[in-house]
Image (cartoon, rainbow, N blue to C red; front, side, top):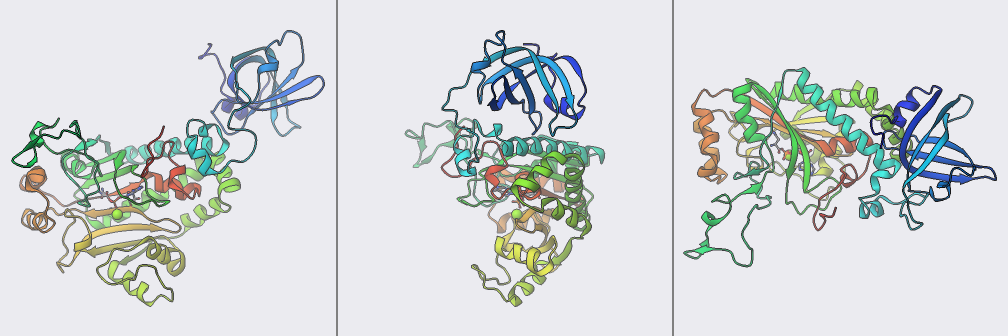
Length: 462
Ligand code: 4AD
Ligand code: MG
């Protein structure tokens, strides 16, 4: 198929020079016929822009008739620069080959489709301009994430996807079992997990943090970057049942240092998007949300507001706004509260730290007031929480009390406690929701549209 000899449209357009023989392969995005000429626009997925093909209607192009919208084609020909035209360069074919034809019922006809409809045809949606851009952007930002951490000496670790612990303690795990659900083995009136695949209860992980802590207390600075799973019944535009998370974990690090790294990391990603993803950012700016570029630019000039949870609650209580969920010290902040703080009160991204112990996870370090923990949430306008992090409880006696208080099963956490027996040290980390940060940077309004194959309640198609 001349895979190694073909030219990618992205590189042709980057450097629009004359050439006598290039091979291009892709899918027809538009076809227009005049009396003697046919104009095709071909897209091979390497960039948003198409390559313009100008074809004289000659006898020898026998397959031209069937190279229609959606078809896959291979074209060999000459590249001719046309600097006066918008498309700058065009391909004049010597050979035309129909690789895969496409019937007239192709769902992606040339008109705008709603994002809801495109979710129903997720096998074709990356061929649209928007989802091509989203998925190329996703790939580039994933690269930026590795670059950020690798350049700072962090090691990339693979935390397991199957686990026996509930790191966040929110009870939102998917079970992993090979039991036939119609015939579950029982013993003394209870499920006999001993007979299950792992000889115990097992789940899909909600977070790689606990394992990252093991690795950080050996390798120093580490990060995970992988899928995590939560069976939350949250049918919102910000929740997925399978989402990607980046979880750095740093030994000998406290909450203030953790917050500083979280801020630098977010700013790095915004800057990277503006500097290295111009094509996608310009597309989002034009078609998805006006002002996306200006918003990121102004954010880069701003500073994170840093307040305690107690201060946040005081601000929210004074707010001249009725919230759906009333605020009081001790309740979890809802998206509406988080957004009020960023969008209306501070008009800036905000870090809220020192949350009440009772509403956070067992592993967070207890503050001296014994009422709050060294936790931080990073909030951004439009989305609310984008990062959750904390300093971890490194003191064995206090950790044990927390484990008991939160009802974490000892047998699932003994190894975590041993890290505090053998050379314990202060350490901290955070989790950035990859899909949420992509939403924020692109301006896409629904998290289901920044992931190629979204999983959410009652939907695991494709
Ligand atoms: O605040 P969370 O639950 O924190 C943790 O999981 C910690 N173990 C992180 C750590 O300290 N290592 O989740 C972190 C982030 C959230 O701020 C949010 O951006 C994202 O993960 N997130 C989700 N994204 C999409 N869909 C969901 N259902 C999400 N739940 C959390
Ligand atoms: Mg959180």
